[in-house]
Structure formats: structure tokens, C-alpha cells
Image (tube, rainbow, N blue to C red):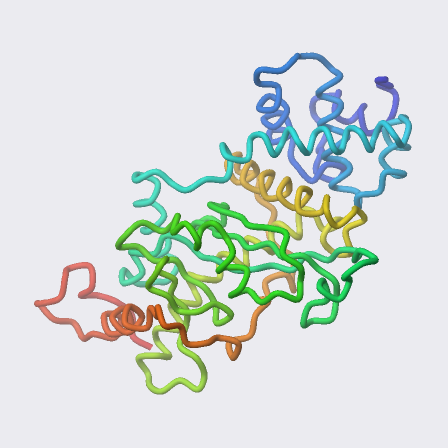
Length: 342
């Protein structure tokens, strides 16, 4: 099965060549991934090769034909390997994408305060948004997948920390469904999984501003009424935009995958996307960072889609905005006495 003379394997086996052009991962990350997936499994070149085939497949526009030529193996074997290794990655999802411990939560909230440029945002525990992934629509019910930007997609809802590392993902809703509906059908909302009491997550205007069952704070809608609202939106955007940056990094790393329609069946697409988010977190853990390409940081949603919710978090937003705009005063908590004014 193994032909060590094919160029892509020679690069890997020489122990020194840069692997990013072919695998979109550096050597350290690829080695970490192979060792992680080896746990409690048989050792040997066979499984290592399967992981290399899968990562190369992700990096080369999901074309089985290209991969089978690169590794000198039958196309049916490549197809089998892709589905096998994707299941292996899904098996470790809970170890890689998960909510933070108490100690990690403290680091995250401090990180968001730094992103926002104000300690008022020191109670933020994540940033959430939706991302449309292009697909080739199924023959049946194809219009369900046509989004408002007029391309066929499925949706990835993701919550990330201050570094852009995913804490939670929910993927699979067709592109025609609005972000707010995806949220209301996701486990994080239905089961009130996150954030903990006293913390908030940030979202853009495509989400409702909520206090229950989760605390989700969105920006003020246009037209803004005063300087306090403008100031709040400015700092909110600075902190919230880490999720857009995270999506940008994801799309840039797997640009062959995400810059065109996924060439897989729609029912397999959520699995492929989930694997990419798992690899995204593994890369961040290993310091394997790819900067998002220009044009990949635009948000997907429009502020005027926001609707008022009976479980509104507007009172929380008002409190944060007031704290952000409060003048220096000895009666304020020390952390709130010094901040920038715009």
C-alpha cells in the first residue's frame, strides 16, 4: 500500500521539509495529530499514512482523483480512508472542542477585556457567530440551502475564546435558516450550557440580545442615539470580531475546501466541517497559526435583522454601556476608574 517514492511522502519522510504547502499544517502539528489519533489504536505506518491521506485531501479541494494520484493508490481506497479518518477525528472532538475550566475562564475573560480595550468587558466568556459553507445542493429541497447571499450553503455556528479557539460548534442547518433560529435550536441555547452565571457571550446584530436562557449581548442597532451607544458598539466590536477572525483563519487554512462548493454529499459535509474545526483548535494549541487572508473577515449578518426578544438582555447592555461611559470616580470599582474615551 505504501509507495515511499511518491513526492508527497518523500517530503514527509525526510523529516525536515516544510509540509504546509501540501498539508496546510506544519510538521509539529501533523506529528501531534498522528500521535493523538494513535492513542489506544494499533501503531504502524498504515494508520499514519491514512492520516496523511486525509489531511492532504482536505488541503487539495476534496478531490479524490488528485489524492489517489498523489499517493499512488486506488480512488476507492482514498474514499474509504477519508471516511475512516473523519470518524477518528470526531471521536476526539470532546477533547479538543469544549467549554473552559474555571481557571481557563478567568484567562478568557481577561483576554476579552484586553481585546475590547476596557475592563468593563471582563465578564465576557466568548464570541459567537454563524458562517455559511458553500455546498453542492441535493437534488431534493435544494432551495432550503439557498441563503440570502444567493449561494447554496450549510451553516456553522461557533463560539470561540479570546484566541479564536472554538469552545462550541453546531453545524448542519441549511443556509436559508437565519442565525437566530439556528441559535434557538442549538444545544448551547436549549440546555443553557454556557456561559456560566455572571458571564456573557457577544454576538452581532443577527442575534437577539438575551438575558435568558443564556446571556448574549449584541450591539445597539442603528441609528445610534448617543455617544454612550457609539462607545459601547466600538468596544463591543473590538472584542466580538475575534470570531470573524477565527472563521477567516479557518477558511484561509483550508482555502481549497472553503473557497468553492464542497464536493461531498450534503449529509457528509457537516462531518468534514467539524473535522476542520477540530484541526483548527489543534493548530492553535500547537502555535501553528495562519493569518486570515484579506477579505475573509467580513461578518455574515446584517444589523437590521435583529428583533426584540421577550427575554431581552438590553438591561445588561445598558448597564455595561453606562459603566463604559462613567466618568472617573472614587466610588467606582478600581478596574473601572481608568478607560479610554472616544
